[in-house]
Image 1 (cartoon, rainbow, N blue to C red):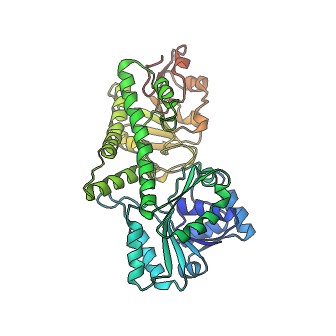
Image 2: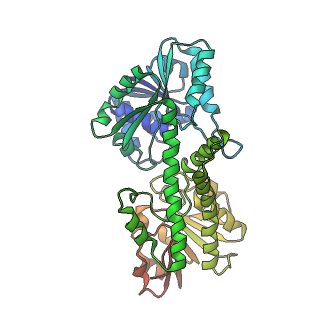
Image 3: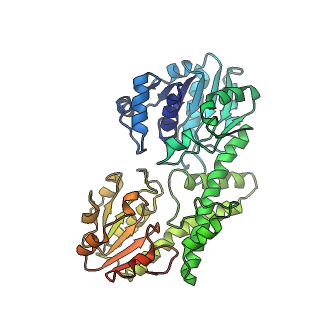
Length: 438
């Protein structure tokens, strides 16, 4: 099929490239010419394992191309995916749909033949209806069909999630278009993915509700972890015990810092705002949002306690600063929040990050990036394991001890069994929801 993706951000780029790898002809459109120039050379502007190889493969095969000519790309394609950003608006809660509607206005003025227009961006319930009104207003009735096809891609696992998803959700108010998407996704559905046709509004809500539920699971186990610390119980035992119940499941039941990233923070807030606007308040979602904010403060206070409330001139090393492993995404990362507060109180920060140095941190004079873990951890007062990168799961503690008279570790991801440190007198190990060194 002939496909156009508008927007080469995380969702648009990964989805467009993967569709081309399934044998479709795909044009990825963006207005950033420098970015497009990089992409045409197979240089990927995001950190996503395996994506660069797929781009080069499909560019070479002639199935994938990049363009800044929106109108030409639209008219060459049958299916138009809108995959532009929908960040949090200035009010701090709503989704900013200005980029979506800007694209729709352009499409409405230029399409000459029937197009299937798909929202791949995460959008609030009813956005498809608004898009339809814009197109109808510009006298393009009959030249378009509006579909919602939400994405469920995890950063760091996006290619796998695209090719082997749990489900493919197609929201359309026209049953005829369902057949088109059945054919488009046939290679994926044949591998076992569920094909879920539904109304357009239902598809829009499925995306928000999915992210809100996952955020709820994270907040739930973090709240249980707080209780575990009070009653001398290991939260890992609790998570295992409840996660083996098939009605609950073990995924996302891992205690740690506040959730972050490009989806959960903004999508929970946007969903809560929709509920409020429709006089159907979502009390559980609102509680999750509030708890996640408190989680940041809770972790911060624990760090102060570990350092006996003496933060000035202390050297704190962060192992990982991205919100999760296998991504370079800093959006709503707890590390950025903590580092900002610590340097204001006079602390000095070292950090090691597998995805490379970060401009937002390096502009501070008391923040130093190291490209070697053991240089970053040398002569520090506290080591914070913030992100669950694989290379942090097998640290050489003997080497760390040789570089420090006393080692204090705060493991925010519970990467180690705390019993391991019982016989290491020079290491004090703190983790989440577990007894200290026990």
